[in-house]
Picture 1 (cartoon, rainbow, N blue to C red):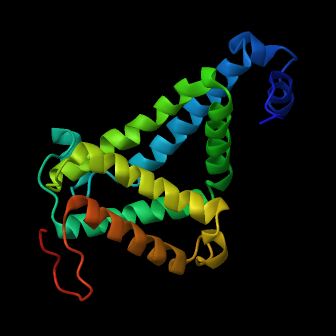
Picture 2 (picture 1 turned 90 degrees about the horizontal axis):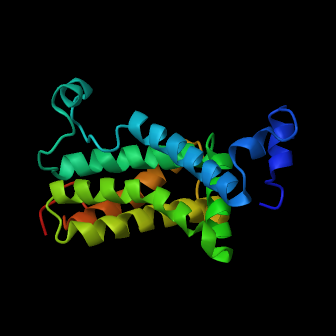
Picture 3 (picture 1 turned 180 degrees about the vertical axis):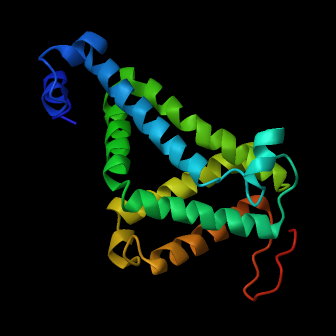
Length: 205
């Protein structure tokens, strides 16, 4: 973060000196712009992964708006697979961007004036609450927050934590399968749906 300066951005973007500061007058404004851009890119990834659509056909979504029908066990399993694929992407091609997001958020812990950047993480929580409400979860507001916290913690662990030492290599089929299992376990628990050890269909708990 010490290297994130107006002058450094000008140099990296090959712009005349002073260009960045003309748009973002303070360091706070510069960091906020970075976080906003990272959030936009992450949101685009989520949209491409159809994370909030379960198995609903895209044409139906475009015609009728966001889906509202209940989510069953099959939908939850499909959703877990899509989230796992997205996490694996953020561990590989999106690794640098994910690290940048964490660096910016850590900066906010040292500088209270940057706390506003945390609000860019509310979209994922809103989405999770809506999904869990469709799955029939008890208290989807709280559980949606918990789901995002768990998934983000999984990503952090695989990226910079001890999980990076034991997990399958990012980008591999084994990595996606392992992430799928982890997300599936958390998602079914938050939805209040039993996750059987056998291949039997899950039942509502």
